Image (cartoon, rainbow, N blue to C red; front, top):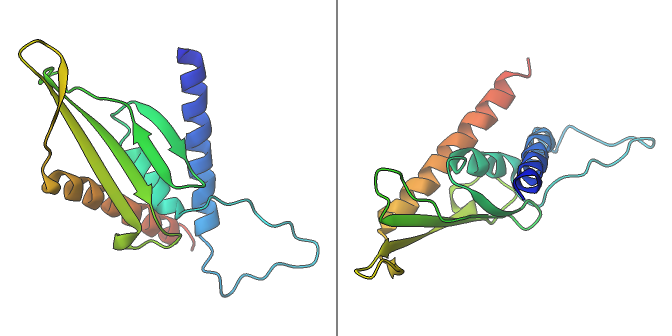
Length: 150
């Protein structure tokens, strides 16, 4: 099971890296010639995709769909707070790098008196903080890609 999970994470990371190359074209100056082959791209903005995977890399990944733009983590417990856990779903809504092209949903559970996990409220600020972290990382990736073209 661990080998399959590691293999799938490596495939997802490779897709994310390949998507950055597809994002680097501005669209206006690149024209395909007769003999050129169209490049396979993902269905969402590659910078947002890669930034999402980077930002959530500390959490176990449950599912990632680069064509639908959905990343779902598995439950994560901070070792310093073992009585609460978090799960995050990120929806990438656009092919452009835009602040409104991203939606983050954070789920939180806490152990009740019997030791069972029970849903607990989260702050809207937590979701905004994750969105801002992903957007900041996406901008960094875009700037490093632009800076590398010299």
